[in-house]
Length: 510
Image 1: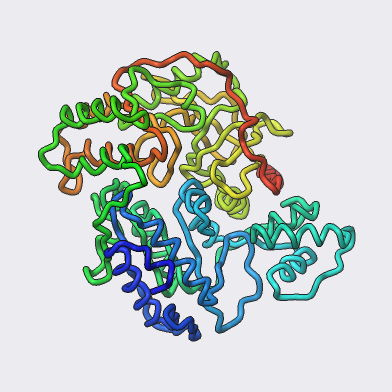
Image 2 (image 1 turned 45 degrees about the vertical axis):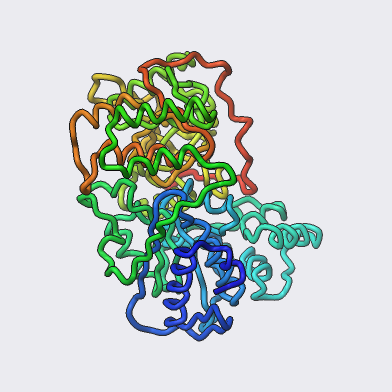
């Protein structure tokens, strides 16, 4: 066990030792710091499971540090240099940009699953800079770039370990050095997958084709992916390969949000008892708020979490009405959710461009204004490392009691979006916000229907997932009301990406 791991609780230490034993069996000895070449053979898979607050992320972070200290290289999604045959590598992945950004904020170099499956193709001239920064080549001489520009790139890379960010520091744009994307040809070594409760069987099979060793980190109390019959991929692993963290870790002061989440495990707890528990917490701690109305100011950056689709649509339309949003256009600062890419098969490369830069299904986006071409939008992809994108867009705004959505504007093809002021709890999995509003009337309906999922009342699973999306403050909204906004929608609070990437997805589509 590493020195840092000595701070673990008993169950974390046991899981650390078991994963270390798995890694030792595939040639990575953390105790001695000895790395053996990768071995060909069967895929090794293990899982670390536990409810919110059990220390999964802390364990993952310490495992990453131990592997780095042992000499294992971290593979990111932004650039891969020439690989040495015997070098051991690790990739830390999450299903969504938001989930990956939560890890990055904690110092873990995470990227999305999609960014590992699809790798960038660099312009050969600028790839020389990337190879030099990654210590695989000599300092290059590039026409148009001064020594000072290369020095800026090097200093940036030393601090942030980001090739695109370093090239941006040298004065280059993303379109200068990334010419496209391709599906990965070469397999990888070790993969840590966070939020693995979100994985479906196909994604799991894809990962097993890429990685020879997989460690899944997931919460068994969350909602299983749609069409998985309530089962998660780690449920199918043999018992010896699953290490469950039982102990719930507290902050210096007890966390009332986690207290509420774990109270849901009580089989005797009714919905009414749970709401009384929330009232008690709200009286004692300002991190829990019993809301009499939805706070519209919060909806622009953290959507209201609901169960029913009809509730989601009503809240979205109410949000737009109180901001006086016209039907035929979007206001700068309106939140959107990517609903996929609508491109024919012949434009596969353009689809990869969009998805690799963060516009995957479920991605949270803020509208920044129209693009230079009709039908294009400037967008900020929340949680993406390079969040600024310009893309052909099809925006759909659903209306209450209407089957077909209203489309304020649209390109002929491109990325499709739904409004993001409210989302279903299913789609919120893997994301986290400082402030989260949960629309309680929806969960009351689920409780009254007595629906069961994976042996547990559905309302409890919904409440657990919704509550654990909040990192700082939970609003439990008990009435179907909407507060008036106290300020206009804004975009000046969004961080500017180091590389202003653009995607002209309608080019060459005729």
